[in-house]
Amino acid sequence: MISCIIVDDEQHAIDLLKRHISQTPFLDLVETTTNPVKALQVLHEKKIDLIFLDVQMPEMSGIEFIQSLNGRSKVILTTAYSQYALEGFDHEVVDYLLKPISFARFIKGAQRALSLIKPAAQEENEYVLVKTEQKGKLLKINLKDVVYIEGLKNYVGFFTREGERIIALLNMKDLEDRLPAERFVRTHKSFMVAVPYIILIEGNTVGMEFTSVRIPIGDTYREAFLRQMKGKILTNKN
Image (cartoon, rainbow, N blue to C red; front, top):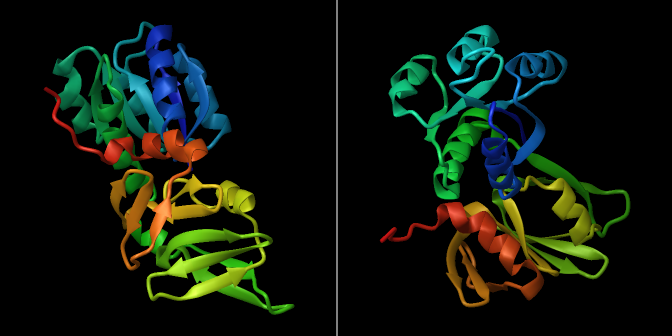
């Protein structure tokens, strides 16, 4: 998860960003404030990965705020005025969002921040140790190898890119809470899929790389699943 705060002197702008963040599984909103001085205090007390920062504020401008950070956190600037964009990028901000900020544009900036804060090289090294059917045995599973997961009563099956099925003594709820939400999404009471390996969404099923199995999309999980995938879907704006 990426920890983030919102700093904006307009409450309605904060409210919009809060809605966008609530729809983005890999963002964890820690604090919102209209006071940049208070935001600096939060940064002093907590480790914050990303700041959604307004440019024009009465106590301190967004640019002045960035200069006081000394690179401690990544920044996405938000403003109604495009003329500040060049100056913002001079300070190596992640992105520059023009108000009013659509969710499609927001998620593009958030994904850019994710790629910088948690680069792919780090993700390649992520793994879990799971209890297997064999008593006293723990098995390492590299998350990048998992295509989908199926619930099997008191067990789950991890299906890998190599076509292997690894049975572990776990349940789907525990996995949903503990696996990285930016990589795995629940589609059904009995299934989770790895987002990078989705190749097709058709009706109530999901097609995956490395397997011909179609993963079902349950009614209970459909809305949340499609919301997570929304940033990946390209549509004609007209």
